[in-house]
Amino acid sequence: MAKSLRSKWKRKMRAEKRKKNAPKELARLKNVVAKANTDALMDDIKEIATVVTSKKLKDENKMELDAMEGASTMKMDTDLKRNKKSLLDQHGQYPVWMNQRQRKKLKTERTKKKGKSKRPKGLAW
Image (cartoon, rainbow, N blue to C red; front, top):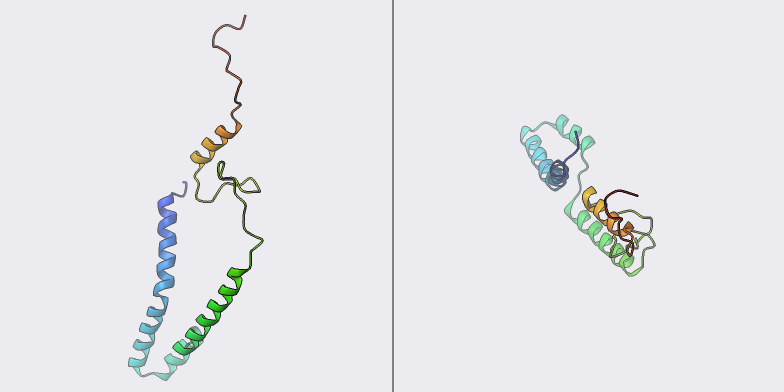
């Protein structure tokens, strides 16, 4: 059975939600363990998850922003050059978001020979 666009979208959104909620879940887990007052459990959690202070996170974010600003001024060589009419890139590939029907339609428009008319239907004699 084919993978539908809806299921792909749902899977993508669930993954983004997991990323967004991961810090909250970790904090909630730490609170539960702290309320239990067991040092053995806290040691296990420290092995599983890394504890990062907010100050360290802010410093890392600042460094990332600085790096991104420096990278944005430089032009990347990996930018694809895409034809606006046919939507093909330099390697002859269509964009990822385009479905098969749209690709087929564009291909027929591209390969259609202009100027030649079809032979009339009927007997060939």
